[in-house]
Image (tube, rainbow, N blue to C red):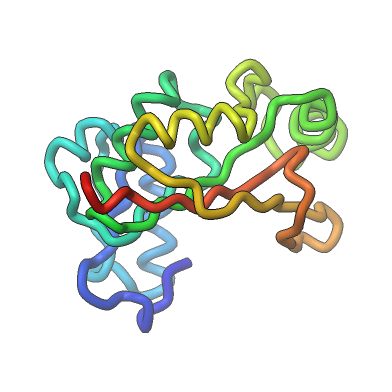
Length: 176
């Protein structure tokens, strides 16, 4: 969650296309005492980018990109939301046999961590595909790191292995 010391100039905004995740997020904000500090909106990234172009120094899209109908359009919206020189951080799932085995079969069918059908393997995104979409949107990839989740300890670690989950840090070109 977002801790109060991190809330500096612009309060964070949590746009989501579905009401259910927003309801969960609102409950978390209430539990954390952050109801006045975070704004929640039911909207698409594309619509939100039209309302607030260049409004944020940091834009995050975590564990969502593999669920959107059009990755290129969403990445463009993320870039549009960032101010020139602003950072965009995205996490998603790579598309390869190992990611299918772990993220779909393992997480959904064997361990039951996620409901069956949560992921559509065809929507997983290779790092090269995401980097290409980011460049087309006026973003420069700064770093790509792997993210590993241990379902038994419930801990996440970052490292070099981008075979399953990975995080991309990009920066919006200043000339934009």
